[in-house]
Length: 334
Image (cartoon, rainbow, N blue to C red):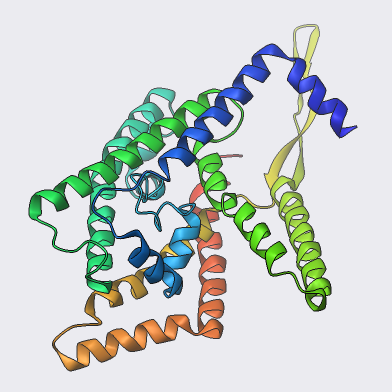
């Protein structure tokens, strides 16, 4: 059944071209993820990422491009941040809220989002370079101001390039381009993980691996069910009589999705959880003793699995409630 569906999709010429285009764009993204910024000690960089859980998590979401110090090391995170900022501003600023209701207004907001992505990408690139330089002097060595400016410009251009690719993918109506880029970055490390699992395979770990696979499948199925789930609220329109004719009287429904917020609360929560630890990295070698101790305490607290897990759960729960409140307006949908 699945094979027949795939064959039907492949036989449709326009759909086949769109799929091949999307795959080609994703291949370009993965090639760019392995083009490093010049002047970087790759071995020292890998040691830093392997020994730091925070940087390791950021590297996973960037698809390994951060560990390679590639030209697209920041991924599409600045664009996502800019999009979230304008979504929140639409709740605060009445003019933006009115613009979001019109097609021309949404196009203008999208243009402003692209403009905001540029300074955000430059700021995040500068912060990441500064963090890596303070973590180890062997990564970049002696970098002049011109070299630093060039690195920030190249990395920012890489983010804009990915944003452009994501919009091209979205235009093909195969899916959301930004989401596909994030997905491709995350699953890019899957083949290497499978290879390592095969190389280091031990029969005593067979049941653990099977259990992990089963949990992964159940999780994916559960996520799909929750994401696609919706409750249909019945709506009945009263009949109207005009002259000798009767109008209306139809029955329909108002679909309410179970998960209206999508993955936005998770992105919010990850950003908040990672922010204190990243800031603390800048002050861990501070000359003031109490500042250095405070930075060490913050890093140690967020490396505690129990503290991290409880805080992450509470933030996801809170942001889900908050974001649903932002995007769902029952008074406007009546």
